[in-house]
Each structure stands twice: as structure tokens, then as C-alpha cells.
Figure 1 (cartoon, helix red, strand yellow):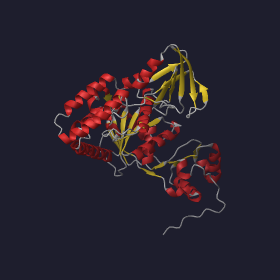
Figure 2 (tube, rainbow, N blue to C red; figure 1 turned 135 degrees about the vertical axis):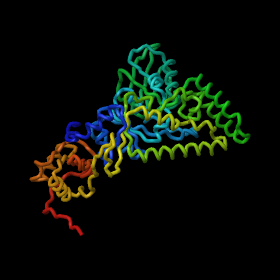
Figure 3 (cartoon, one colour; figure 1 turned 60 degrees about the horizontal axis):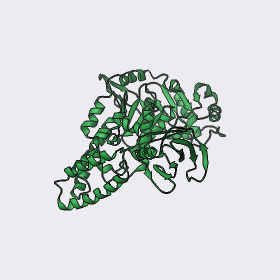
Length: 463
């Protein structure tokens, strides 16, 4: 499919050549749908930075629609007040594990997310558990590994990120699975691995092996926690009396959490004191280039995010909710800019004014498709206009049935339009390359079908 949607874009070769090298380049006049198109065909692994969560999720879906493996790395939750955001944390861990396996071509994230601290690759690998049938293993060692991986021990049927110990059986609900598993031990050997329904009321299958991803992004051991608490005490020596009272309450709660599980996901208060155990997303991106969606907007957003974070720390520190050192709960601007400067960069801007005479600047005159083509009559008229303008037209219909219906709809123009029975959400008009892509999402709802009009086509009245 990649040959189908990159054919005819000679300028892409120049852009990709810059991206694969050690250069910084900028593309102007590029519409949002074409940004995903450009990223999907990348010859190198790519970090794509969007300005918002909504835009990042949209880009991820668009890139996947081209058949390119992509994943979304969401930003962290509240790192200051210790509120657990397990669902977001599990999504980040899942994305990082896919990255470690080489399964991701494009990692999409936000400007805010790149400041968040993540587990180091080596710790992530160490905390990923592997069990195999008839493998030599003790239930005690398995429990110890689960605790280090951030799993919480419970007495009832476990939910995601939890485990239960009952005799020689260990029930776990891995964060990377849709079903929980039960591992039965016989002395020092794994006797069976059963897959259960989410409510644990029925066995749905038996497994030869199981891989359990860590449930926490803060993978700590008891020694790490003791060191962190010593550093906390040193950092709070200048607190006023009222602030100390509140901090004492917080530290008491954290001590109980850490005693139960040093890798508890709610221990984010300790992040500034265990930074040597953490890294940013750039620590996971060997050989990656970076694409920045609307650079001006991104870097303005970075500045606002940092100002908001530092201001919030100052306000919370006055009441003892955090300490001044919690400004370091996220990476510094210098750390992020340094990491970005070491990567080949591609800026993607919708700014339409052509920039000439600048090395590394490219101009793609593209536009999004009009909304009115969802109307059958208007779609046929649109295709006729594009052909009249001398543009090559490609339409993506998702399946062969819709492809056949489209050809009937186009009538005498069917042979002049290229149809592909593959999925593509949104297309665009490339005026510079004289190609028009039409995605199924541009002309169809998920349940609609092409219908040949029963009345003659009526041209829209203008004026």
C-alpha cells in the first residue's frame, strides 16, 4: 500500500533524505491530513510531537489507517499530588514495551508528555515477567517480582494491575492482557497456566507461557525508597511550621504505601528524589528522528506548560503539599531541548506563504477535502472537477463491495479514477503534485454505502 500512496511525490524523497540524515528541515503549506500521510511513509523511526492530546490521537489513527505501525504515548497525570492515573500509566507502559520490541514505526505524543519521567529501558525489561509451563520457579520469587513490577496484592478476584495468592496458586490480571491468568505451582515448578474470564468464573483456555508487563512507571526497591526519604528530609529543612505539619501527614501516608509496595504507582511524590532511576521518552528512542507538528505552536505551548508547572509548585509548597524541589518532578527545558537538538528534525507547518532561497525548507501546497463531498451528487461533481484540473484521483473505499459500488457511481469516469479497497480515514488535495486522495471517512460514515443517484446530477447554484 505504501507504494500506492507515495507514488508521484518526488519531493518526499528530498524531505526523507533530510530526515534520515543529521539535518533540520521545515515543510510549509501542508494540510493536517497530509502530515499523517508524510509521517506514515517515513523511511526512519519517527517521534511525532502534536500540540494536544486530541490532535495526537487523531494523528495516530490516521497513520495506522495507512498500514504503518504507530502508538500514542499520553502525558502523565498529576505528578505533584500523587493522584494515581493507572489507565494512562498502563497505556504508556504498553507503548514503551511495543517500542522495546521494535513494533512501532511512529510514536505519537504531545509537547507535555515529553517532559514526563518514565522507567529506564533496563528497568522496564527487568520488571517484565516471563512464565512458561514446567519452568522451574517458586511462588515466593514470583510474588517478589510482581511486587517489584508494581502489582498490588488483594484478597478478592484481582483487577488489572493486581494479584491474589491462594495456597500454591497465583492469580494475576496483567495490564497487557484482556483476561486474567492463574498460575499453579507444584513445588518449584509451574504446573499450569490458565486463562480466565475477567470475572474469574470460567476458564477460557490454557497457555504454554505468559508475559506480564509492569504495572507501575516507578520501579523501585526498598533501598531506593529509603534513600528517597532521606533526601526528602534534607529538602524540607527550611519549611515553616504550618507547612511541616501537612508534609508530615503526606510522608506518613507515603511510608505506608512504600512499606506495602515500593513500586506503588501513587509514589510520584518521590520522583525528584529518584531521578537516577528514571529517564524521559528520549532514553527509549535510539535511531529516531522527530517531526514537530506546527513548531511555533508547540514551542509556545512548552513555555506555557513550564510556567504553569513552576507556578503551581510555588503555590503548593507554601501549604506543604509539595516542596520547592518538586519543580524537578518533570524534566527541565534544557534537558528536553538538548535531547531534541541531537535528533534530525522535521517541522510541519500549515503556513501557506512560500519561503524561497532557504536550504532545508520545502513547500507542499496541499488542502483538506471539502465537507460537501459526503453528498453523492456533489462527490461525483468534485471528482469530475479534479480530473478536469488534471489531477490524479485515488479513492480508498475500505472493502471490495464499496469499491464496486463506487465504480458504478462514477459511471464513465470510473476508468479515470484509481480505487483501492483498503482503509484510509481522510485524504487531501496536493496541488503541487497534482494528486487528490479521498479517504473513506471523507465520503462515508462507518455504516453508509455508495448509492447511485436516481435523479440527474444537479450542479449547485452559486450566488
